[in-house]
Amino acid sequence: MIKALSSALFGLEVLSDLTPGLRMTGRRRLPRNMSAGILGAEVATWAAISPSLLPRPWWVTAANVSIGQGIGHLGATAAAFSLKRFLRAVGKRPQDHVSARYRRGAHLILGAGTVIFAGLSLRNQRRQAALVGRDLVRGPATAAVGLAVGTAGYGGLLLLGELTQVTISSISRRLGSWIPAGIAWPLVAGGLALSSVAFSDRVVLRRWLRSVALDAQRINRRIFPGTMMPWEPERSGSPWSHERWTALGQQGRRFVSNGPRAHTIKEVMGFDHAHEPIRIYAGLVPGRSVYQSAQRVISEMERTGAFRRDIIVILMPAGSGWVNNWGVSGYEFLTRGNCVTVSMQYSYAPSVFSYVIDKNAPKLAARTLIAAIREAMESLPATDRPRLYLGGESLGAYAILDNYRDLDELLADCNGAVFTGPPSMTRFNQRLNRDRDPGSLERLPVIDGGRHVRFVSTPDHTLYDAFGTKYAHTWRRPRIIMAQHASDAIVWWNPKLIFSPPHWMREPQPPTLHADTLRRLVWAPLITFWQIGLDQINSLNVPGGHGHNYFEETFWYWDAVLGSQSQVRLTQQLAARMTHYLRRTQF
Image (cartoon, rainbow, N blue to C red; front, side):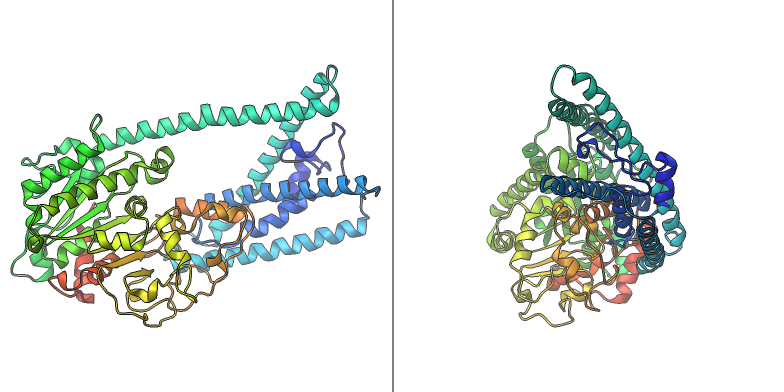
């Protein structure tokens, strides 16, 4: 398919680079039938269609294939160019042409390999889709469409590379009448590259980020469908609140509108009595500092009597201010509503843009809010203070965790914590993983025999490690849970994937590890980085328990962390009733 397309694009001219920097002479060198670039693109296709963490929609497959083939073309052309230069430098004559018999043999071998790997890709797509419950919409048909569209995209990249080459060669020839040809070509190529980078950064990227930020601000002002101003005094945004309904932002309004009320908790859990859960949220208001927002939270806590509740949970949101209602509702049910949830918005934009625009903003917001609440608690009698818990998902987990230098400092600051889907750039987790117990997995590390911290991908891992073995130590308080699915690309994507295979990709996958990814994943330079990067976009479009979706499993995580602080021990029947309520009522 690739050879036919490139022949249609260039006839028999198949030695054409994706970038002009590999062809340092204006003279064309045209092999008769095939080139290193086309061969490299075909081999790269095998890696591009290999499985990554999640089944792909057609457009993700297409992006993988086109970029993968482009990377293969570039790499093979660069290798062939360097080899020819080296052979000429040592006095050898590289063979520019091969016999028809060898050409046919190469075509046959590569064609057979492509057919085999394409068939394996279709089968793996079906298997991956079944693992995450998406077999009806992400089967072999979508993979086949993506392969075809991606190959066409590769052809477009070749055309772009050819156009760039022609442009540089033309300008270089004209400039060559004033300066030597050996200087003209690099000068033109370098100038065009710098101009392209400057244009992309200052005109395209910055304008795009500004556009994203403005769109995010507009979305923040909208009312999310189904949300209504709460009429419970225990909630921010109510008529009694110091934080106006309009100041909460879209996700803040969603947060205070959602969740069970006291009468719901009694009905679902079978209690005779329940408190009205307190939910406090401070929106991102123009002109208001982070410190002032934290003080607004404190005033809301004083107004609602939050410091008289048994449990306070500081739950940092994701980038746009989104809070996972599943986890919050879980401990509200388990504690009969005798709890307070506190959150504070630090950005309008989704997490990835929030981090790019200002990676320190989440940490500053978390640090300021935690310090303000701890200072307020210090004024209370030591015997009459609520227990303080921490939590966050995605960038919210990063916001809290990367304020702590080590585990001891985190344990000293709280009575327990649940973090879900912490992104790969969370340095706190990187340090924990480096110090994991020998023999434990990078995907589910064991820290100090499970004494305080337990990494989990399913609720079973609160009791057993990835190999189904009981932890060496009794789980002591404070208890910390780090929940990360094997298929959560946001947890596993890392710039190091560009040049080195990750350890987690080579380690065994025991049966007790949440098996929502294929056992064998293939690493290829640059291509795997691109694949898992695209999986991040796709990680929310799968059912709960997979990808970056942490739903009813969080009930069990909070049950394990709270322990005796829960008013009831969670059972499968209660979890099913809680799940039914949330699926029916939340928005």
